[in-house]
Image (cartoon, rainbow, N blue to C red; front, top):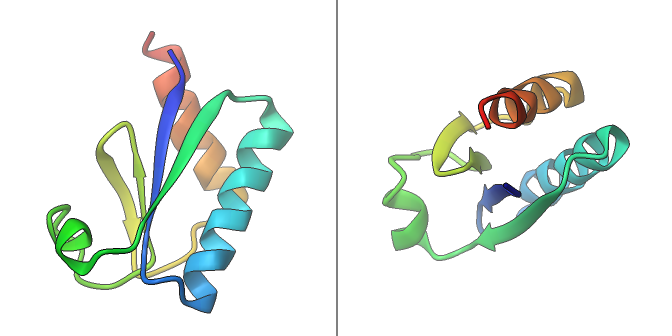
Length: 84
């Protein structure tokens, strides 16, 4: 199954950086994924995130208000890969 990734944020500099870091981390590991950007405040709030950027994988909120390290992103993604 392909990993569903969502970057939550208005398009601020940190939101763009989170998207770039996430793509770089997953591409480097060869993990197949789709990435969707969620920019509407109501849609972001629906995930319970109060501070952006937010990272969601397969509908699970993984981080909010910070940019996780690439290794952390890979570890989260790997949990979904091994769960299949």
